[in-house]
Length: 517
Image (cartoon, rainbow, N blue to C red; front, side, top):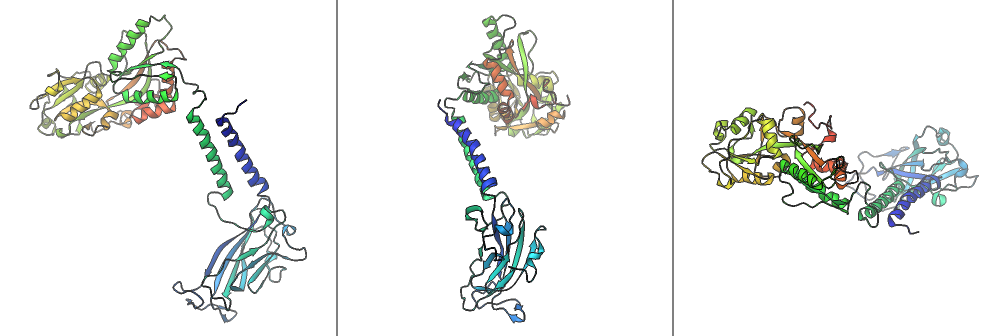
């Protein structure tokens, strides 16, 4: 039986941390004596160097001036996981000294123990205690009993030896050992790790390396099976142009995740909500499906609910979509009251100067009838009212000197037309408008198009994005799989990235309405 590289990486991912943990906490950590040099400094003027030094105040010891005094603070510690007793020190039984510290180029003029763990007996460090003494350049320390993590600190006052002329002193030389200790039992210079010890960092690095290897094989795919939620077949999407950016990105990502799924999209895939609903109803009728069986190869997305008369089209709320009014920058306005918006679309206000803007005629650029963005504008902003009559079938024919109105088929075309027409006012999905630098979004009653404004009931221009199927699609169909994908974390990230909010994140996900409505 062959073992895949992914399986091998998984085995290593388990074996490496287990082996590292056994080494660190069972074998290597059993006995370990360590020390740290926490302070080693001269008491000289920093501008001077060498034996001819200047001190701020001449230091004396027993009434004698010191030539070049220095101070060293050492921490002696049990760095292992087992206690150390007198018998653990590598020294003859009749030798009371457990640790010797030499200071090349310096002689010891005084020393004391400044700090010790509470469980370290003080009797080891009283004057006259066996093994606790100084001789010339060497400090001798007794065979101190150290429980796990116990320590003590030795402060030494030193002076330069006659004849030693090097400007800098060598580091202290610490000699000691423990029987059965790590790497021969010799005392080791340790360090403080605010994050983790070197061994633990190596362990973490090994885990990261193994995880990266597993991820690489997972992403590479190889002969591994696709995710369980993947389906096969061809899915046709249609409907809302406002929601099209979400669907295009989701379709691309779904095809990458599920190699046997195909979602062909063209420039005319999304021609509007009503268009898409009609196409879905026609496809279902052509399939002549029996009652109780749904079409598993088509989905239509609509800005808001369908009209009556299509009982076999079943809705599933997907997201809360935000829309916004957009204007040409030359209009000179950025905020309109709800009344001003309604007056403009009613045709009673025809020049921006009437709303304290510039003296520019207002040109309304609207989506074609059947657009969900337009329907939402009429229902929730214009209070059921509609725009004035179309004055030209081609927006390029708008008279720059007088007000007028034209209609276009897509959100992208509308934004381009508003950007190219001084005085133009249109409506768009928020994400597309934000990405178009040549238009300005209009606040309504001072409120920008935000999800928070919709939640608080202050911003009126929003709608529920609804996915429609023809009947109930089979659970293993590509339509059902794609809907599950949109509701999953990756799908929700795509929805959010385009300025919408997934229905599952609202207080009432089945209704998919702002919380105060």
